[in-house]
Image (cartoon, rainbow, N blue to C red; front, side, top):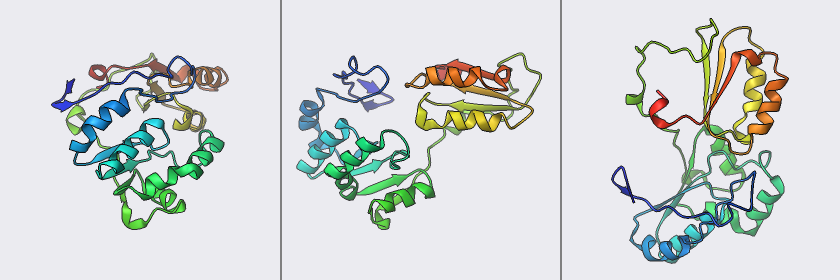
Length: 220
């Protein structure tokens, strides 16, 4: 399948029906396709290394001597997610995936220190912030109201509803203000039920809107 001029492969997730509240990537056709195609790649970009998908991809890249880069996306600390599983994965060779990467990309300087804490050489770390399509934003466009509130000041959260995104902290910080609206937009990734419980007890729940998934053409 071609997406924006890029050949793209979609894999069925074998474990999708087994895990209700977690995303466990198990693309059972990846080894076959990867064995045929990775040898033709110039470089492989791994987004999040603690997955079966990443393990198989890195093994194939090493087999064909294709360089790869890793983007941990803030997942390195043991304080978030399942710390025990993370430690087992890292002890079983997960950290070696980081050591063998051509580059380890960090979103922020703080993530640089997280890479260093597991032993990644500083010369192999580069800070690459998330990109933004500037042409999708028009500062001169009038704001559109998402609720009946009279407040003009809006805070927007746009992303997956996942525990590691820090929505609980965002809501707590918003409750410290006495004005504005908080708009939460994004599909559920295992946190929706907990979010609904948090909002029930929120002191400012009338000023918080949860929109759910928003299609790309409606995000503007």
